[in-house]
Image 1 (cartoon, chains in turn red, green):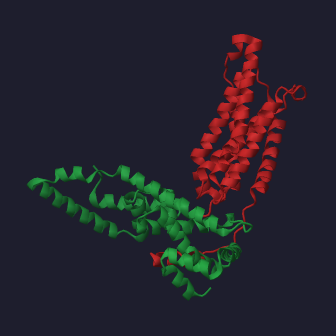
Image 2: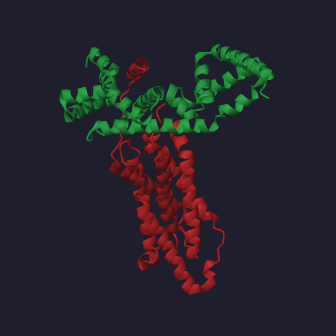
Image 3: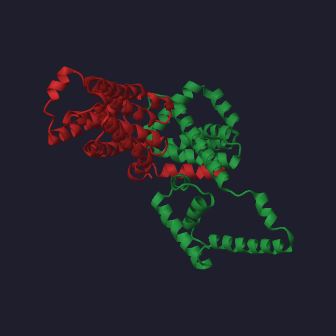
Length: 219
Length: 211
């Protein structure tokens, strides 16, 4: 036993290379948000902002939902960078829960308001693949960027870190989507935004650890 | 840190070694020293790194033994921990003590071992069921045949090149995932895949296809 450990220590020391120290979670989150802001701003510019964006923001009806989604994205990213450090508590994973619940609640409240205004027509659900395409199209590459930033977690808590990274990327992409096109009913927002975010977070949880280990981590 | 002192730390029983270190200099002073050694290791100082790993080995072993009663498994978990420390060394923040960072990694690797053991246990067939088949004269013959076949297989595996033998042992016999096997032996996942594939191919060529 002792000999095997001694051999391994000798090998590890012989192969030692200087490493760059991982940034503090707050700094890493700031870097991540800067990347997200640039990518989403470009996507919004390319897609063209919705015509009534200024009006909607002034009116304020969409603001709680946008704020809740933004907070979910920021807190999920901060939690991912905390969890990526070995000695940090696993309870950091719960950090975005309140914001995520608030986000779902704002979408649910919108559904009820629509129901009061429009009656059963408010519950008519139609396909909106463009939502899924926008959120997944931005969320997946952004998740990959997050996995690269948190690659030091590849051999520790890769699954939860990747899932939180995916949640953060998808939540922020959903904010970008709200600036691009309006939804005619809250149930569509809840269904399509919610489902797209869930798909990205689940994909991240399932495939993220492999991507981190094979693509980004030290062998 | 001299090699002599490191050897004493390695060979002493874990709790005694821990007590000795604590008595000698106090936990705060030791944490500070370990932290400095790790910072030097992050900058590429191999001597500090080796000395640090040797010094913290009793702590890692104590953590793994607290979770895993089997000494061999605890030792394997310590090896996994050393590999993870190496891979994740950039994630240590010198503003914090090193001990919790080390303990967290050791706990995680020990828990991985427990999970892997329970997965293996679920897949293994109960020995009692196999015993019924080998009862009676025919059973004895069958058992002898099985023993001969097992001996042939063992010698065929022993004849494989080292990398293939290691890959086969970890992925097919110990039934570890590629990631876990990679952690254990230090081979990359793709190298493990290739080595396992070649080993299986060599065995099939010798014994014919599986039924």
